[in-house]
Length: 122
Image 1 (cartoon, rainbow, N blue to C red):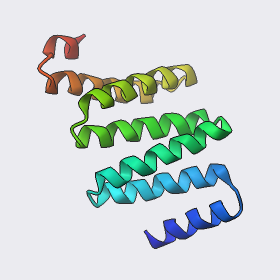
Image 2 (cartoon, rainbow, N blue to C red; image 1 turned 135 degrees about the vertical axis):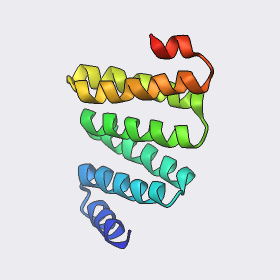
Image 3 (cartoon, rainbow, N blue to C red; image 1 turned 90 degrees about the vertical axis):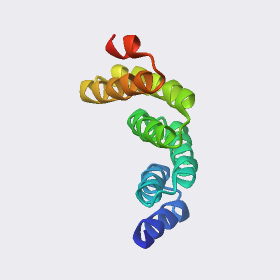
């Protein structure tokens, strides 16, 4: 965690927005691994905003995908579904079929959790 924090601090110091976004996502992964889901959620949102600031569509998609996972863990299923739909659309635009497939699996699981098995099979 300390090394990721140092990298994040340096990227901020040198106004390296792309690396700042990548480093905050790395810190979010540490928080997620430690079960600190609200902190991970906050950091991911910050990373997405940084990616949007510089037009990094891949960074946005990665952030949205990770955010969906965190929201699912937090039980924020409606928010997760909304983020997941946005992520699928962006991944499709980027031509990332693997990412689209993964997000569709998450979408199916969301429908299953909500007792909508018919939609999960669609």
